[in-house]
Length: 472
Image (cartoon, rainbow, N blue to C red):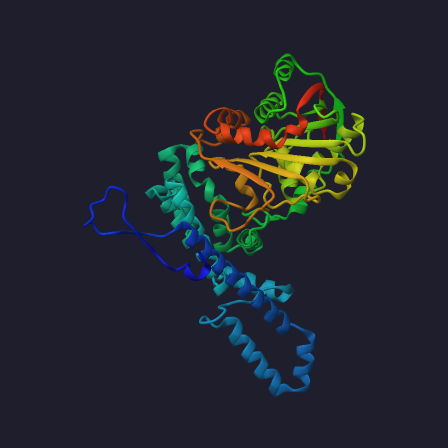
């Protein structure tokens, strides 16, 4: 399959149809994604062309030459003006630099849409359509009304359609229904509103990156960082009766690790395990829970501020607290270490894998993320085995900008195991208990696959110590 065939439509006869029945025409979702890639590349190229032309027009060199050669300057200004405003070409494509951004902001308020935005909208719409092939609920009338309104930039209609969807399905199921394309919908709304400050969210999402601004107001990550300036600290803690009971039956098994994370909760605890492995080596496993949703910010790194911070940065309060934990526990430099994290814990684990100072101090062998948006992050050491477990009904893993219809790829060396199961509604689909239950049952083959990859950690557990992680 090549990009040249992205416009083709395949004729398919449904199973059981009469031979003389007319063929039903449907579009291969892979072709839709490839067409989306082409449109996204064209949109980004058109935007760059507008920025370069804007920079050339606002250059002082151009002004100086125009003073010396007035006729040439007038001709150049007219040609540049036509290129930047021609509706049959780049559209109103002024952007970049102080002057360009002011003009672009005025154009956004007056709804002057450049060609790059039109192509970007079409690219997002194709991704949504491709996702509907794997998630039929997106093609249901109520959901399609919402996605069509977002692609058209009709915010009032989006709100009405969202309200109808919630009334029909309830808020959790409505959120789960649109979760496969939540980033695309947010990007569409950011791109088509009159607020120019949040456009970067849409362009980064289109390119398959992780946005550094939020989609509504365009607030930068620097503002979030101001709320999360703790140096990170770790203190030994005692396991309560329930946690001690769970840890007593634990072992080197991915389901056991997820059960342990579930028992740790998300109020600041992490667990360091020391194992006397079968080959005679001593190795360590660190279990990292996810976010506490009770408060926007609390005294631990496991809060919503920490979640945003870890998604956007590498050096965070959570990662510094983890490093403090390992030092306080006396883990020797060069020790082999496996990190297993759920949600925010998985993001923090990948941040540590991306930190040169951390991987220079400890020999990180495995990172296992469970329901975590980590696809945009890369470990410093390519030898680190990255294993990502994803329930496709879970909203959270898609927050890295890589959805089911995204063209963003992960490295071939990664092991990504994903599935669709009966645990449909969010937040239940994101809970560690749901992941553990699925791996025990319908996805037991994924459990076996992960366990095969971590056999180096088979052996006798000689220590399981909880630690309380704190901001300060």
